[in-house]
Image 1 (spheres, rainbow, N blue to C red):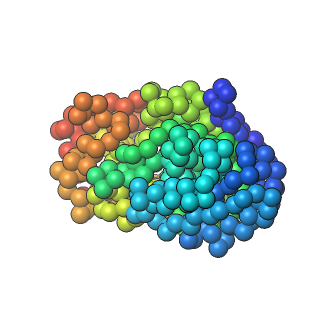
Image 2: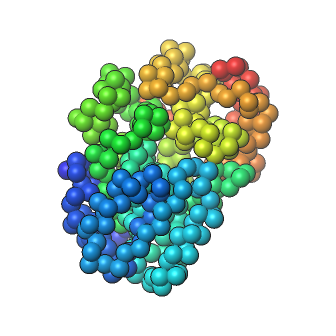
Image 3: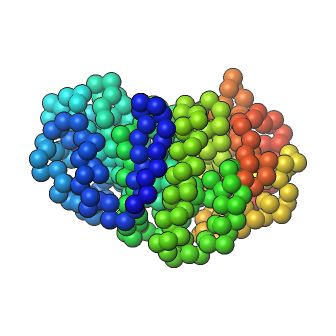
Length: 359
């Protein structure tokens, strides 16, 4: 087992990464603050792993909330189901919420924990690759709104993140590839050597080779932890983790939540950001081609949905957390391994990329 730390002073917490961690009761129980425990999961994960968690909690008052599975259910209504259970069971502010699932469940469960009685403890047990390498770490919680993705939420850190690599055995191929989009992102924004390693090992990752997979998860989590420790509330460098996300969120919102998986939309968005970076004289054409090729090898889409016009794209991108005073701001790449901070993009350059790339 590997242990990383998200260094946030008194609010620091560990990330445990390894095999068969769901069988290790002490990893979980040492972070439970009282007898009251609520497990939040979904209809896909509950039959697979809920019992693995419950077996360690016989000494506690445990309740469960099993939500529908899918991005389209990442709403305030779903979070209210969690509140209903907490209130009906008379859970106090010393209760602990355990989040068992992918990024959608993690974001909603964390948001519920941030809000209930102004904040209760929660533990992340991510069950998708995307959640393991990205969304479970860093304390971003929230829900979608029909007008914009993740526009309602809070920064709220967990007590611990337990990454059991074995649970990925039941993850379908599409979800697995979606997680690889976030892994590739780390190489693009912070480490060209990791990007090269991914080019050399993408086939091993797709084959779910345990050694390669564990290395990629640990390395991604380490980079995420370093960024969060430096900039918890996304005032500067943490914004670079959103490479491709402004475009990607527009795709998810415009096409309907759940049509594209988050990682699929981010892959397309990153290719758009790479094209825009090239048009700004930052990336070379060869670098853009390498980026697109790696996403394609990871079985991810790289073409914009034809249903979204450039004008509609811009309209959707205008609803984004990085925007300031109405100006659309995106993360670009100076080179593979080095991202820019959010920068204002003139409408002419943006429209050119949206009208030409993948069309």
